Amino acid sequence: MQTGDDREGICRPVTKQEPKAWYGVRTFYRWLTWEDRPYEERVVVFRARSLDDAIERAERESAEYAREGDFEVLDMVQAYRISDGDEEVGVGTEVFSQLHALDVPADEFLDRYDSGPAHTEIG
Image (tube, rainbow, N blue to C red; front, side, top):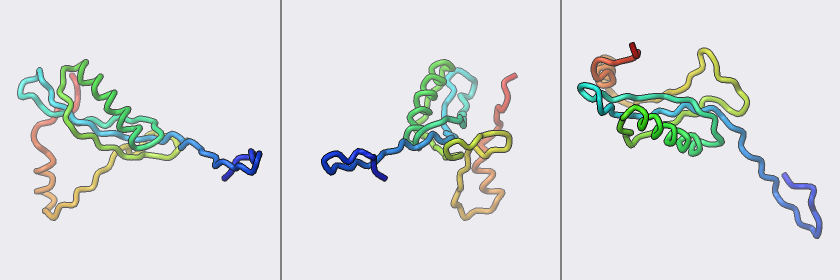
């Protein structure tokens, strides 16, 4: 695609900014003040122009979240593109998915993934 500006035979490519897409970004923490210092994983939704932009936004949000809660931010971030451009995110939208390429029985996989009691609600 070119601009209409062809003065002196110069045609410049039109650069269109990528529309913002929705991303789910998974971050990991260690709680420093709770008994047994549990680990936490969160998935937070962001609008961003690219995967890298989503990760940068998540890292900033993650640092603020950790500062407010006295958590240690762990060095792993995983991002998942949810939708393109103007597509809406709503009820039933998958916000994160990860495939595990392991050749183990289902019970063994679930035992690995379920590492103990989970706090899923703040009471």
